[in-house]
Every structure is written in structure tokens, then in C-alpha cells.
Length: 173
Figure 1 (tube, helix red, strand yellow):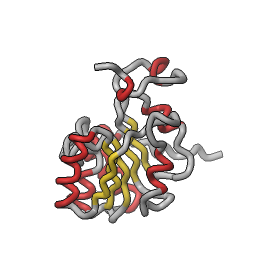
Figure 2 (spheres, rainbow, N blue to C red):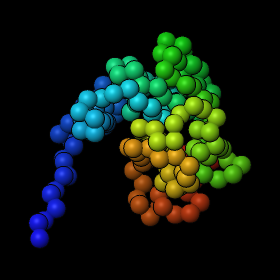
Figure 3 (cartoon, rainbow, N blue to C red):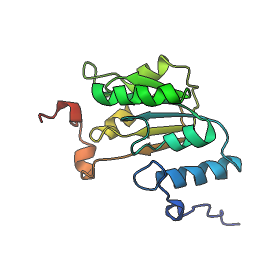
Figure 4 (cartoon, rainbow, N blue to C red):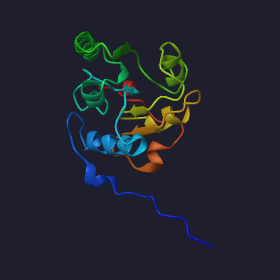
């Protein structure tokens, strides 16, 4: 019996920051290049977007490849910065909302996306709320992105995965 081929690739060698923080821009370009032989226009969804550019995992795709992107920001002042960026880049669909997995604490990903024209099988989801990212991902049911990036706040796995994880919006400053 023939052994299956190992298609695993060490993507870290493609790490490159254009707008991202930890090399995600280069890795994303390589992954989508492998999927389609070249990066074609697609759809992305990023929350924790700030101004749409600062440490963004999706803005390179908007600026250099013409992707459409739903960008969510829950902080009102940062959202104003996002509106400024979106006025220059019509591919950005800005949304002001706190993303959460618990009812009454914010809106779930599925509910926010249902209010946009993003397709069911969009290309890239970037989750970055620096707190209950795992639970937000776990509550995401109605869409099927091709690639998902989940940034975590450096907490141990047992803290990240515990039920009732604290959202940064609930932490007293």
C-alpha cells in the first residue's frame, strides 16, 4: 500500500509583514497562492480591525489584490479611524460592533455577517479580540471560511478554553 504524501509545508519561511504583526501577510499570500496558483479577488472578514491597516491581517489583500473585506471594530474612536480608511478603500465594509459569544454582551459573528453581502464560503476570517477568541470561534456556525486566523492574547490554553472566558470589554481598566 502506498503511503499518503506529506503535503505539510513549513509556512513560517513565508512570513512577511506588510501590515500584519507576526508575518501573517506573507503566509496568507503563500497559502492563497497554493490554493489558486495566484491570489484572486476574494472576501475577508476581520474583527478587532482598528483603523483597518494597523496590524491588519487583511488590509494587504484589500490594497494589493482588490479583496472585499468586512472589518469590525468595537471601540468607537478606533471605528472612526476605520471609517476614514474605508472612505479611501471602497472594498472595506466597516461595521461598529462588539463581537461576543454570549447573548447580551455583544453580537455573534453569524449575526453580524448576516447583515452583509459576504458569501457563505468566504476566503479568510481573522479573529483578534485579545480575550475570548476561542469561544467566539466555537460559536461561529453559519459560514465556512477557507482560512481562519485566530490570534490569542498569550494566555495558557486552559484559560483560553474555560467556559465563560472574559471578553476584554468586561475587564475593568
